[in-house]
Image 1 (tube, rainbow, N blue to C red):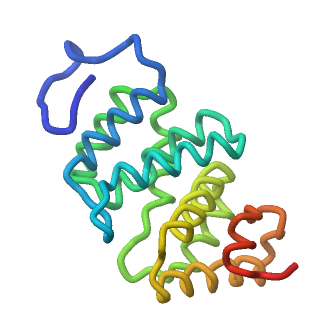
Image 2: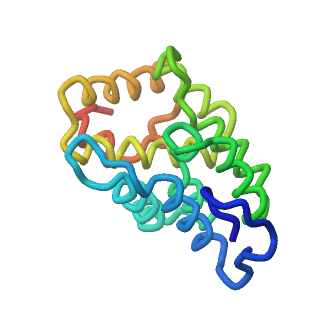
Length: 177
């Protein structure tokens, strides 16, 4: 497999791994050096989001997006990540389109960003909901908790059906039906 830090092309490409394993390898290469605010590895968050998506019954494509959801936003070299995804994943352009939607741009209103994802991609929205679920389950600060709560309220006020929001999020944020 082409790697983030290599200049190898097709000679090191891995053909015997399934797409989720390849996505996990890309996530590892992209985030291996990063840590979260609590000191845990960034990879632990990505893996929790992927596993949570699996437990919630989402298909493998959503699990692939889940493990890679921060690759372009928080990764070492977004252009290199794009290249590696193109070289190693089937349906790479569709994966990249969703990853670009999942990339929160500096200065962009967070609630509007999530609403835009809802309007543009069912799969990316599922991943964002699973990501929010993990973030609010992982000892968020009061500011983070309020950001997510206001985002969910914004979604509901702008026509997103309650059924599209995972019950775990509704319960943790203490939002009533």
